[in-house]
Image 1 (cartoon, rainbow, N blue to C red):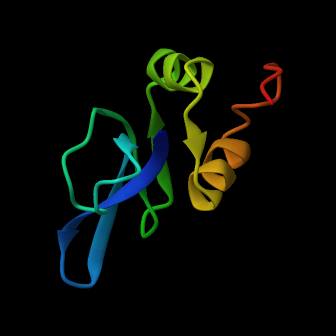
Image 2: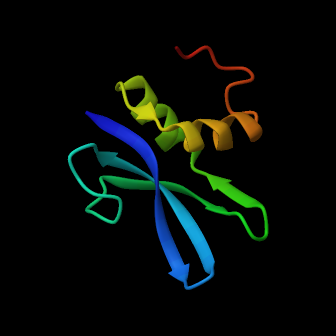
Length: 83
């Protein structure tokens, strides 16, 4: 099963997170299938590769709670009907 989850990058005390599609059996820093965006909590910036995220969601990928909140805050689900 594939999940959309955060992968920690950056240096100490200055974390930046990549949003990645990754198999649930791999650890947080493990090999990802594809990078689909990033989130910087310090600058409060978000970049989303919308076609890639839609592709994985249509294939059955489940976003984690935090990634779901990031997508919701970016109004990703506003016009889309995904379950």
